[in-house]
Length: 222
Ligand code: AMP
Image 1: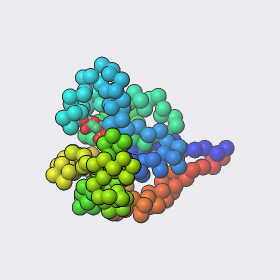
Image 2 (image 1 turned 90 degrees about the vertical axis):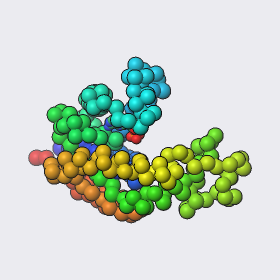
Image 3 (image 1 turned 60 degrees about the horizontal axis):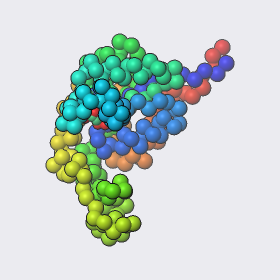
Image 4 (image 1 turned 135 degrees about the vertical axis):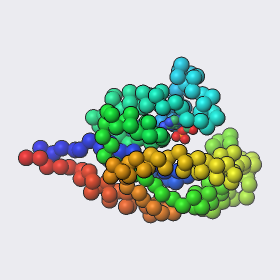
């Protein structure tokens, strides 16, 4: 009989570290469910659920949603899909959330994307957006034909508030203070795997090889 091991993983990385790209590749190759706490909250806000309405101001102000609410929300989702394996993204953000998760499931591995802050700053601050269409340019590797203007409409590009240098510095700092204890928590449990680099495409092969080794896709059982 050929068994596929259920993978229970967490991905961590600062905003702009390439977490979205890496998560997309992991779930495609390993067939996992991607559970993003931010996406779940945004969906609740969009659908105007009771929880969404309650949490909206918290999220708008960039504050964390209370641990008990967040943990219940995620654990409910995990219960539904556990048998097919999952990759958690954005959760846990605090020790209390990590412990709540631990009470119910054992996390097999925590992928930590370690990209130097200077690289992230350069990446994010070179990003310019055409707001009406959502088209994104990068002044380094995907510049608009005319600097400062959208290729298709000729309309001006703007730098999102999120991508301004001072905001980026603040977001990175708060990520660091917030998540360092969680990284330490998983480090002490021996499940933290840190991948360091400045380019997603160079880090990725190491992550893929690691996951293949760890969860050899098919496992023969007698
Ligand atoms: P994200 O897209 O992961 O940056 O999440 C967007 C916002 O949702 C955060 O700024 C928090 O307000 C909230 N949020 C997401 N995940 C969590 C979590 N694990 N704990 C508390 N708040 C969260």
